[in-house]
Image (cartoon, rainbow over the protein chains, first blue to last red):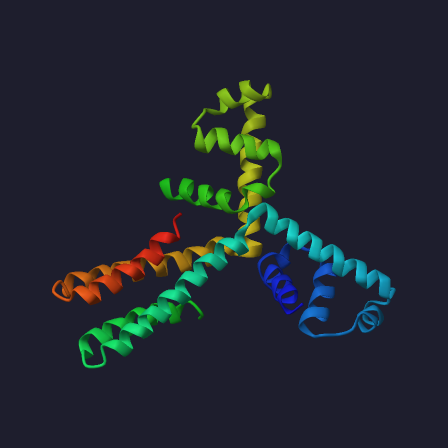
Length: 118
Length: 118
């Protein structure tokens, strides 16, 4: 269940801008602000079923974009590799405690990785 | 000029699947198979101007997708960081020629990077 929500949320981060305004609003209120279907229905003055449909259609559209473009898969693969590199660098730093020069250079490389999250 | 072509080509790699079939075909023949506008016009039995418009509309659509989603920018940033890491690792390997164990571990990290292109 958590994985499904995390997946939809990642798809939304990538392709959310391609959804209709209504779909995007519904996704935001439901997934980010954790409102219930009834609360969102009230907010939009539409039926609970209408909100449910908007969310389902949004999820379907997001999955279709990923099926066509595969950019979440592509990006996740690269990010996982970067995390793996980061943990290998940590290992090397631990193993070479007495080599200050090497440690500095390894830390510099880790700095490049940290820069990616800015 | 080269940069503009390279940019369109990168945008096409990312978002090409969102274009219409006609736009995609025109882009492929023009950018990948290097046919002239007239040759493509003949292939599709449409005017040279029609091909020109399909290509212009395709490029415009690709730029709009990037403006909305920014995924080429996001991905390019990560890939550049990975290339930077790779060249730092090369430098460390050159600087530590006599440390076989360290070199092996650095080569392993480079292997993770190489794996990204598969």
